[in-house]
Length: 174
Image (cartoon, rainbow, N blue to C red; front, side):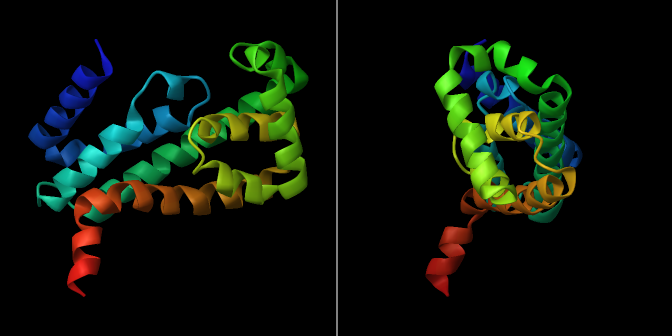
């Protein structure tokens, strides 16, 4: 199955099973935020498509946004805990072992910026799922990590869903 078929299938399922939209969106956001799995799921285009379904009035915005945020929170949390558990051993695992320079930069970024690295990393494409893992390896304390994880997930969900939901048109009208 190619990415386009996956995107179309997921959007059809969301359209046909509207009550499940928050859960489905949460699963997609979890996949997008989980280290390694994010490379296999075209979540960004699916989330924009779900935003368009929201804009067409098929599904409500708030429950879907909360579902996406919860999925993103859980994905980053699992990635972080994997990093804490394996510590430096995580660097020897795929895909981190293929990009040692990126891992070193990620560690430096996390050590320099702390929790702000988690918040910013959520919005940087490929780094989105790697930064929490590297933060766990670097032993960033749990409380600052979770505060940044929680707050950034809600902003991230809003940013990806709102344009398709009609935010841009609404801003143009006001």
